[in-house]
Amino acid sequence: MRQVRIGMGALWLAIMPGLALAQACPQGLARDGVWVEFPDRTVMTRVLSDGRIVETEYAFDGGPVYGYITLPMGLVLESWALENGRTPAADRESVSYVGTPDPVPFPAPGVRFDGIETSRFADGGQSRYTINVTVGAAAPVGIGGCTYTGLPVDVTRIEMDGTVYRDSMVHLTDLGVTIFLGFSDDGSTPVPLMPVSISLGPPMAGGGAAPGTAPPPLPAPPAGTAGAPAK
Image 1 (cartoon, rainbow, N blue to C red):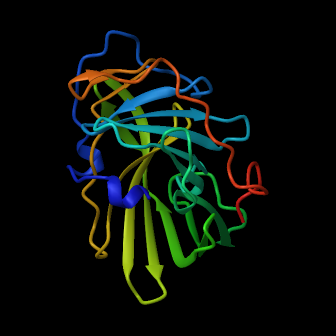
Image 2 (cartoon, rainbow, N blue to C red):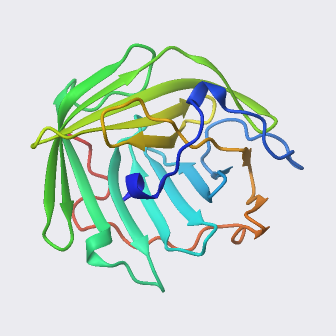
């Protein structure tokens, strides 16, 4: 679901200052959540007690609200869309991983994960990919007026028919969150869409006010997957 919605921009190390923030830059693990603003959407992301990350994504065009539960490496464990208070079965997914090392490691410079990713949808559909995840060296990342230490996370997926997909992400070690930046569906290096601000409260963007000060209640993930370790 993420791949079809994300546009293109500059490479992740070229994150440029965006809108000036009226509030202090978020610091420390994002237990209470931080808001990351992109040109086309706002994402509220927070770190759970076990290190997993919950994201709630609002599109500025008024489309569905999307929810994700991810590992610190940025790999999605569960995802869903929320339209008019309902989650269509085709837009609800649970994902499992088998590979080396086991379980999926925490992001750190030079870390790598190689394995199989299996996605299962509530409507009965299923897909499987070979997956390779690599973490690069730490480097400063500027988002708006805030600077953090970032680890680039690159994901390569190979479908059974040989189609290659690549994702680009960055893990902000100061906050414990991993931000999805962009993808390619032809095996080329992704050209991500960059965030323009990060804040403790919802920013003003997209020609109007962002949604309220907290995301709506998240629909329950598929039975048997919430809180399960990624394997």
